[in-house]
Length: 468
Image (cartoon, rainbow, N blue to C red; front, side, top):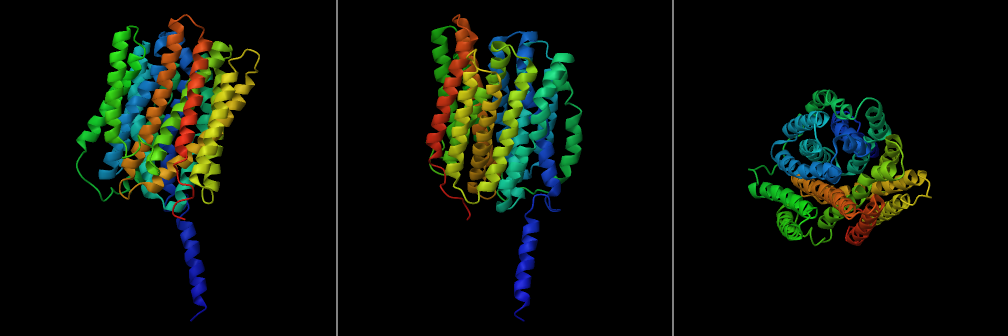
């Protein structure tokens, strides 16, 4: 009677190992579905950064360059909050359908935009849909996989950017140069409905959380207030009249900060240890990385005279190494402290930002930008994935949607501020009669300093793995 016990234990361990794999029969369709969900926004996001100089040259409106990113990201905030709460209450299927529909509508509006203002508005529609999609993805990871598998699933989702990263920017550059930039958007339209048909069945199997209830109207109003406050702040920084600029900026900051208090978990604005510090770190990390990323094509195309293909290669390098960093996180996360991994990633991001800033110097080879941004992408993959894992680990049961929505909100808001402030700085130097080099250099200095702030906050992350 004693011999079967070890055999039974061994059999149970093998069964547990099989059941925990992301590609086993239990999780296979969900894994494939989540990958398909993010392909559309991944292609589009990488493409816009590559071809935006071409769009501005065609439609005009250089002063709206930063708003092309900020409108997308600010609209994403509302999508994140709506989808996160709805997924907690009723499951992720319905929010996903709505998100994909809005994203497709935004693609059509962008591809037919007659002016830069219309293009910026279309980016807002896309961002609304993308925010819903992003929230659904993290809800599914938090609710659909066991704790031991989540680091690997996060790495797989980052790997889903490999194909868009390999061919997205370069393909966008080729399409823009030889066919027309409008087809970069219109060409994606038929793919999203097909992905919906494939993804929807596994999403319907994920049940709502046990903490169902009615809409949190105050939380939704706070999300709208945050968008309005952020928009007022960015607009105020661009107004020529000093009195109007002061009123708009200060009012926007007041509305935005009050709204953040309502939306984010308690202690986030003070970067308290644990999940609040992780969410705060995510915001500053995104502000630094995407603030540099948004204006790298402008550096290469407008300052160094390169074509869109070269700019696309630089962005591709960061996308590829981001994936490498995510898998590195999956390998190290079981035995290394979260604080160490995030800090190491942030240092690599700072090094990458310093490298692309050096390319503004005429004598520095353009290839330095590609190598440097590859280093920055490696750091981003390591820091971003580990920070996401901390939030998932510390989210209360049944509130994964709310917690991950707060994380994504911090990321989107940081990205919007990075690109928006960058656009304001470049516009200021342009109005003052300075060269674009001065404006981009100021942006690079800003985002490097923001990376330093993120490092200081990351000290409050867990020093050792959770649930070990």
